[in-house]
Image (cartoon, rainbow, N blue to C red; front, side, top):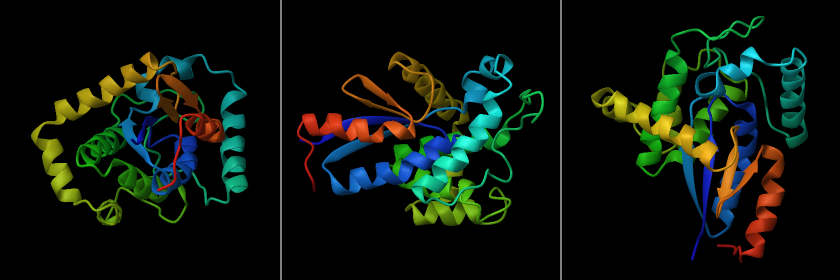
Length: 216
C-alpha cells in the first residue's frame, strides 16, 4: 500500500519551489501517494507576521533562498512580477492580490483534476527560475498548464463558475496546515507528523523508510 503524504505548499514561497523537484522525484521513484494542499501565501494567511518581522529577517531570507538554490543547483530569481503586491521597505500588503489569488485557485483546480503536483512543478519553475519576465502575460501560464497535462482555459472557466468555492478550499488548507502542527511552507505531513522546510526532506525520507518505503 502506498504511503500517503500531504504537502502544504505556496506559489510565492521560494523554499516551496526549491523543495518540489525532490518531492517530484520521491513520488516518481517510490510507492508514495502525495496530496497537494495549496495554501495562500503567508502575506494573506498570516499578514501579522510581516508587521512584527525583525528587520534582519528579510535580508537574510533573500540571501539564504538564493544560496539554497545554488547549493541545490537550481536556477533562481524572484518572480517578475511578484505574486504578492507588497511594499519592499515597509512590507505593507496591498488590499487586492489578483496574482496570488489567481495562482492559488488554479492550483486548487489542478489538484482537483489529479495534476496538482505536475502543475505546481511547471508553474513554480516559470515563476522562480529566472527564464521569464511577465509570467502572467501572454501564453506562459497556458504553456505551463499544457506541460502539466491541463488546459488553462478549462481551469479558469471552472474557477470563474465558482470562485468562492476555490477560495474556500484555500482557506480550509490554511487552517489544516496549522492543525497539522505548523504555520509555514513547505510542510509535508506523514501520519500526523509535520516536516517543515526544504531542508527536512531527508528526515522525511528517513521516516518513510521506517514505515517500509518501497521503490516503484
